[in-house]
Length: 553
Image 1 (cartoon, rainbow, N blue to C red):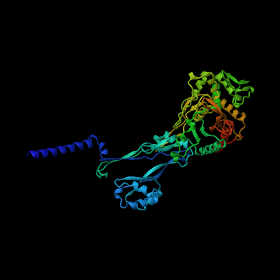
Image 2: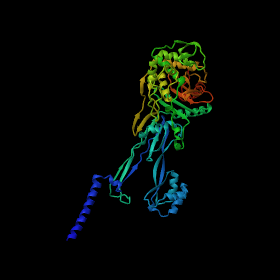
Image 3: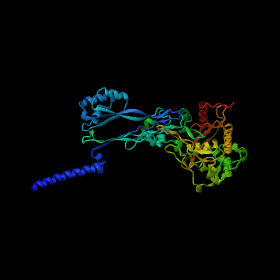
Image 4: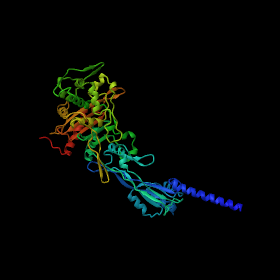
């Protein structure tokens, strides 16, 4: 009897343990059952949103491929399987044999198969072979806008993630949300037919419509490539925008990279110099200072200055770029001949406090807020660090660091009536039937309409009466300004290394576009007037035709 009681107690204890364990697994901590093999989760990946230009031309889409998998338990003839797969895949029989682990229930062999490869393998009718759909990022226009678009790579979990450009900045919108399939399985991993099944559908990514015009992008990319080669420049960038909305219509920098083979390039190629590289703007900065002085009524457009020689600042001497002086010249002539000493005069009229104030108003030292990854804010000294010579050199664009995007954004305020606008590359985001419009966004008002009209007229005169006669499109009034800035090397300026630039807009009365052209270290000539400016006018000719803008009779 005593032994029976012992046996009974052991059985009772055993069944009580089972009941408690089941209660814990099913009620208290059901998720832990997944780790113990009762529940299996499978992530269902969403489709990544597509990217289009402003005319709905595809820039980044998804292309169907297939992943090949094997269920070794169903395999009948391994040698036959290996030879059949090798006929199509060309991976090497030894490689395939090593991949097929017969102890596994399921294993992936390779991915990225085309529809043709899938069909060829299916003809063998291997019962152990199956396929899963997968989507790869495909760029129909290849690297037409590499820096602007970015690319899709992998994170540490081998999941798709956007890097750089639009793909990086809008990764959450484009990426969507994954779904999952939860199913109860037995200890061998087989689905339990009467078990609990739950499926959450994925939320596909949103489509993005860019402000970019593919045709304009093609124009500037080809022109920039030709210009970099012709002038033997180290690097080059072109940005085209609508000055009244700051929609970026085109953006290209060279050298760039192949978006579909990004892994073959070093990280330095991924830098978007249009938003990430800081340079001294040189003379393209002068109209911003002139406009500020006009706005503050410190000068008038018909004032004169006696340009009689260099200006001394302690141990520093400021000269004109060619060391030639014309005597009594107008404010407009100061811009036309790009007189540094004339700009020092205007800067003294404007005053040190106003110089600092307008640097901030124009947005220098801050991010423009453009919707692209990797933007830099430029370099502007603290007011307490400014010396007399710093105020003087700032008037002609030296001693401060800006990005090309900051410059075209600030310059647009000169020609659009005085509004500083936030630049953007996305026009709208589409989520099913809903659209989120990304429109014009004013940061602040800097100039009044009158000042804007005056500075536009002065910039037209600068193009028409400047030191260099360009091959300009006939019948159009175009405004703009050249820039040639020496590059500081180890605390000193190297006269042989320059950033050559030009910012221009057309047609002048109501600009349809504004563009900045920058060439780093051109070898044929160090001057923006002989490199960047001619390249701008080549681009302008094509854009005037593309926009069907008739010449003035």
